[in-house]
Length: 124
Image 1 (tube, rainbow, N blue to C red):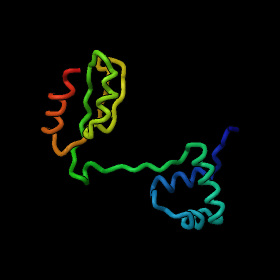
Image 2 (tube, rainbow, N blue to C red):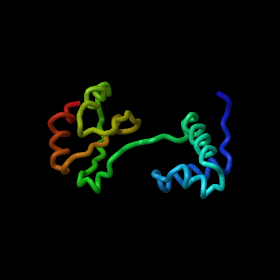
Image 3 (tube, rainbow, N blue to C red):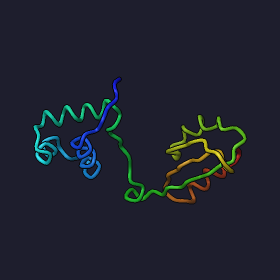
Image 4 (spheres, rainbow, N blue to C red):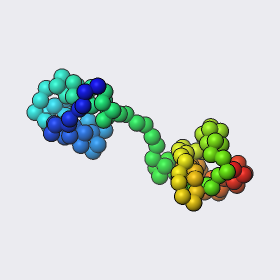
């Protein structure tokens, strides 16, 4: 794939979508003074180069869930493959330093997350 260079219109499209992910192609075209098909082509190009993607997520605060970062010093980091199945773990990665595993967990309250850590994770 040949190198891709962003021009000012591409940068503005990315900026506008970052501000309002629900902005329409028609709105982008009006703001940038181009046609909707031109916006469609630019969006396709940005997506094909991996510069633009759709992600879905939840806002823990609005959903009344709590988020916890758990750092672990594990003897064997392969447990991440099993822990990834846990519905409370939304992200897990190996790290360097004092702790070699980092988990992001989400749950109804901190007591629930603490119980899961104590019962299921602390052994690693």
